[in-house]
Amino acid sequence: MASDDSENGTGTPGSGERAPKRRRSALLDSAIVEFSTYGIGGARVDRIAERANTNKAMLYHYFGNKDDLYLAALQDIYAGIRGAENELELDLSAPEAAIRTLVAFTFRYYVDNPAFVRMINTENLHRAVHLRAAGDMAALNRSILDRIKAILDRGVAEGIFREGIDPLDLYISISALGFTYISNQHTLAVLFGRDLTTDEAIEKRLESITDMILRFVRSDRHQAASDSAR
Image (cartoon, rainbow, N blue to C red):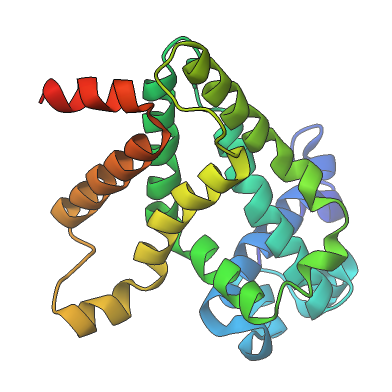
């Protein structure tokens, strides 16, 4: 078990204050691995604690029980993607490029974070009963919709996007086109005999998603101009 500077009196100044945060973060990371691998029912707190180099008593100290730990892990993965989205440079002066950036980020986030995809699937199996107890999750997720709306408004003003697109509907479409590819990759590979995880397959899928989304948002005039330029 890793030493705890806050308990043994060693370490640099401030390390005692940081140790609880590090331990809590390690428990959350371990919980995400556990819940995304075994689901809620199959997850074991002893494995979570061991993976985090601590013990069950410390886990219960920070999170109370397994259900509360699951909820904290669920909130953490949503905060993770929202935080990463907030760091994206989405240039309003180039609305189409901004959409391309958002599409690529979203798809690659799912590719790079399969635990995120599996935990969302798990929560949907439970009809989001745990997420409902998380408080105002809508506030956390509002930022991405506000940014999409700003991009759409700019695109409409410039005549390159059509009017009347709902930012939430667009985000759901961007998410679904990538999420399903990752969440169903194993069954799709068996059913259709194609490895969807190769670099080439990932790049082709990203091209397809980007093309579908851009065709959805473009105005008829701008789409015609784009087609003629090919």
